[in-house]
Image 1 (cartoon, rainbow, N blue to C red):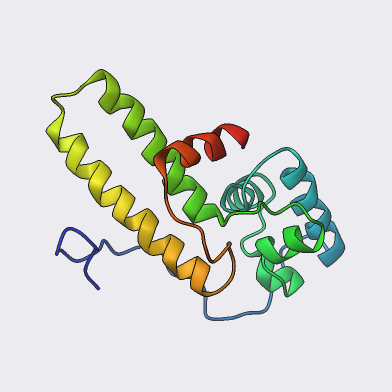
Image 2 (cartoon, one colour):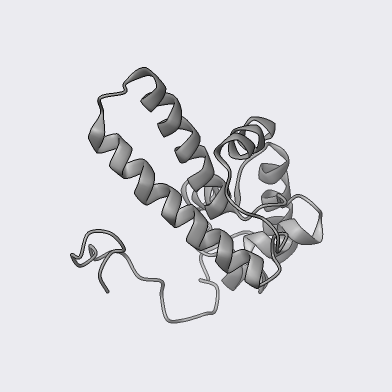
Length: 153
């Protein structure tokens, strides 16, 4: 598949193992893994960061194969998941930082173009989530509201 704005193919990356059973060498049980997820979520980490922490520090390759649930679903069950999806929130943060950069550097045309591409991604993703009723259907991207939303988190 090609990338959205570049018309070039994506880089190859690591693939998940096809075997869905947890490896035998993991010393953690299902409920211990859930507790680790909840503890790292209470520290203020997002689900992608939690996965990296569990992989690197605790040696848990896949929470889903251990518990049968994703990290996000464990967080949603315990009301620790944010109101907005993680990928949309990360794009909003990038847009706010880029707008701040452009206020100081008005002649940076490359960043201006990248902001346009980034905001189109935000609008496209917002449309996707609003159609699926994950966020409010009347939600639309506004830079001032995005700045307020990012400051809250």
